[in-house]
Length: 159
Image (cartoon, rainbow, N blue to C red; front, side, top):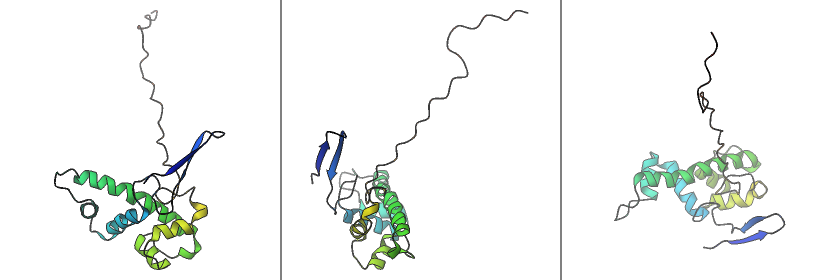
């Protein structure tokens, strides 16, 4: 699905009109992301969950490491967003920051779509795929100075 993007010439930024059911900064819908996270919550290990949500195809194109990366890209931000929303929204206090607990507490089948509507004011600061906050850029530290100067050796000191 193509997402409409508009450019603000004054600010020099682009703005996308993301439908409520699509995941931010991930391919697919919030429901698909939620299903993957829900499977990971009840699976014995991440490897088991990755095998269930991303099974290897006939050509073997989906390997276990790639399936684990795919799952981790969904699992970690959804857990962070759930923790943030459970903390921010009073109607969710006392609820564990898991998909199953939020579904039960809200009485819905699709927790992430419902949470996006409930936490509308917090969407700019919540992590994707639920919110719209961009991933933090990795801080690159300047390369440490070499202990040795480049160039010719200094002249000998007088004795």
